Length: 308
Ligand code: ADP
Image (cartoon, rainbow, N blue to C red; front, top):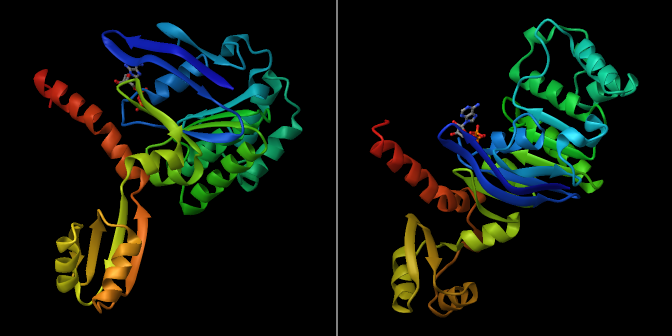
């Protein structure tokens, strides 16, 4: 369990994180979303004791990171693309990390195998792609086999295979009772993997909710109709109070009328239907709606301050 209590960080006059209070529970993947500069990395760094809070606190299993007895056994973290010295190999880098943290050296090969780097374990990190460095950072996070994983933008630089691999890894660990806290700006990826979401903007909590609830609450249900008689059917729908937008020659988007009524109206009016379906808007839409004010506010602020 990770607990943030009114966590606050100022960098000079900039408030990067403002009284953030949330809990990140075990047994699920929690996505941490917000526009660039929202304070995600700063929050994660404070949880890991890499940055000191200006006020408030971040606790891991009820204690600050610095008080953890065996930190790498408790929390594994990967903070953007910085794992290892270019002259080192994955094996030398992880071995040093294992030895300084009382982790059995056999874990080095296990972790390398888990992230798919076993075949390059003796190559210099300097020649690695961003995706390979991400995998190495994740191997370091997994080294102590921790219950809690904190991953800052782990999908950056990964190809489609890498993304589905990391998604699987997060899910498996959460299903086994782990606490997975992952930041990303890739909405669709977060939507697929996280059961719970925390959204921040300008360092402040915007909302936290289960992913499905957030999508339901903040995206409208849309009914799509496909018919070769689009113009005629639009007239009939509008007469009965529905709102209709035309998406293409034979495609309509209808709101304000239940699906069943649309079907019944088509049947009674001898309108031929090729599709009648409902869907929710994506998390991307919800996210944009929720952060719109924040982004707009920042843009206005920048304009006011003469920054372009
Ligand atoms: P995110 O990870 O959501 O993109 P960050 O936590 O990196 O956001 O940044 C939050 C805010 O804090 C930004 O305004 C950023 O410019 C500022 N910031 C982050 N790190 C520092 C630092 N070391 N010194 C000064 N300002 C910083």
